[in-house]
Length: 473
Image (cartoon, rainbow, N blue to C red; front, side, top):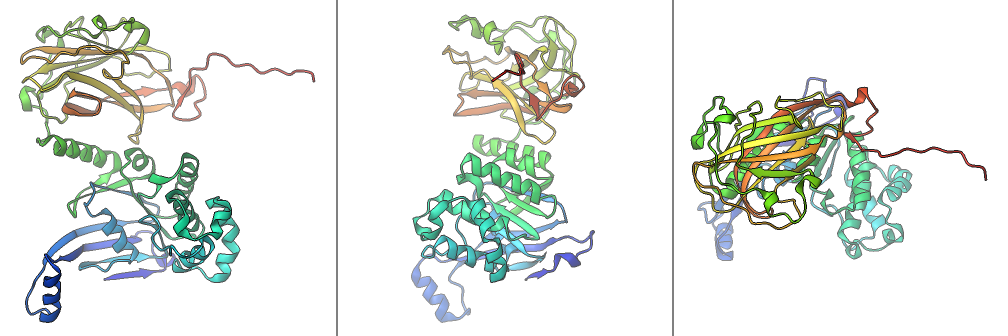
């Protein structure tokens, strides 16, 4: 059962969307004759199998909340949104919504391909509850947002996918819905229009609840307060966006590698501090031996078996197949041995030192990398040992050997706040690799750049010079 109420009548504490034991089942017939038999038997015998696209989902969305919906293809994301919108009828449970729901579901849904763009604007807006007078009053704004020129007088079937998206989003942006639902619709837009849509979504989410489906973690992190993870039609996890996205990333790697996720203590790594200076040596080759130019000019990375003066140790938890396990992570200023997590002002030369132990021989050469993310989980910058342009042979560590990777880089001027560094150690190539050990938020660093200079964005560029002059004509 699905119902809709006026959002103005909803108390602040009452959810705008509430789903209880929500499920949707489809009948799957093995042949056309089975479908005919089912019709003739009128339910006295079953000639089909049930496929549950969604089952036993309980969720609530309150005023002002932005909820990301994630999951692999076929996990039930679109089915959930269609049930909330009322375009599908639940097979079990109920969903209640308050107010007008503005939804951008499958590309071009609600459009008639034989109608012109103008005719489809009237059709789509009327389905969303707008009167003819209101549509006419907002038509100029809709056309300006879509920005498709004279094509608006042509049939939709002549439009490109990007033009259909522009028209659909333009209508949605001008109907003032009480609940906004967007299902992976921005994937086909160009950069300029996508930015226009994102600005609208950022503004709209301050006034109305948002349900946002996307396979882009950066978009989900930027827009959503909470995340709902669906897996095979069931609610796998719900909670803060960053936490659920990390769990989902771990799950995806486990699925791709067909292994259980690695936790601290598995694969020979103990969940207690390990002195990095006590790690055994190994005969792993150094990248710089195979580079045609001096790697110090790049300031990017060195892989070595040498363990110089031990930096402070962080014993990593995480996930992976456990063939190689990270045992210590240290961040120091270049030339120092003391752990330094900030606050940084920007411009500091830092060394990120990752030491790992080979537990069993992997099937491919090693690759190590890191990512720096803000508090929302957005990746700001990072690097790995495969991003060097030069080609070089890479060694496969042997069981019992220790491996060390050192990244030397200059810290950018980050906006004041906290940031995290995630570390990954894998085997393979950039395109195809097995995750041996991945550690989310291995280190947390701080920045106070704003006390030295204004930062207009997430970080400031390394400006080499500024000039302002008045010149006579």
